[in-house]
Image 1 (cartoon, helix red, strand yellow):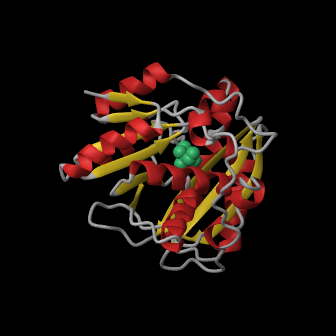
Image 2 (tube, helix red, strand yellow):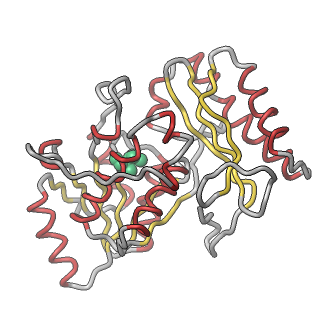
Length: 293
Ligand code: PAF
């Protein structure tokens, strides 16, 4: 039976009991408004662990003032249904005050490495907020395995760097992007798109698929590939490019030539909605076909 807990004190008791019984714990941190992308993370966590915790917490420290914290979509009834269907054991649903009580003053910051560039440049302070909340949630849930989507490729790289840097003994699992039938990468923010913007948003996956076709056909010149991606997106009047980069899949640093581990990462405003997406050209894969990034 799916349990719902909103205090750190209470979830600690449950986690303590589970650990005493020798259960392994899988953890899926989310900000709610769950979709099939989140469900795929929970499904995988259920397969690989004895117990699965999903956190739903809209983390204010990862939003800057001009971003969408206040309008971020919520649907706790549907979120609960998705967690139940996927077979999660516990939803952790803390209040902002539970996570950031009065006087809170310790933050995890990452100024270099995986957090540099891309969304780290466009969304200043964003990854410090992500690292802080994820480190806190890790300290509460104490999972064996934690699951993150590959769509947020830089976030995944940042979390991997954080657990390396801070010697946090948790296995970070990156899971494949889940797309709508027409190619749009699933995202809670897709709900902001009106009908015209929803069509315009297809320019992201269209451009990325084209870039992969070019690489598969033998093109290795990064500038030419970027030009082709930008050309497709720029043809869409509702789209405004934030960045298009070709990077290595481990540190997400720009590369000059397509190498053994490379991907194209993009961020594009469709109207007022900022969407991110990526495609891996070449990578090292594990036995389940999941990419190591
Ligand atoms: O990817 C998200 O939904 C958030 O950034 C996360 C990891 C739950 C931290 O708030």
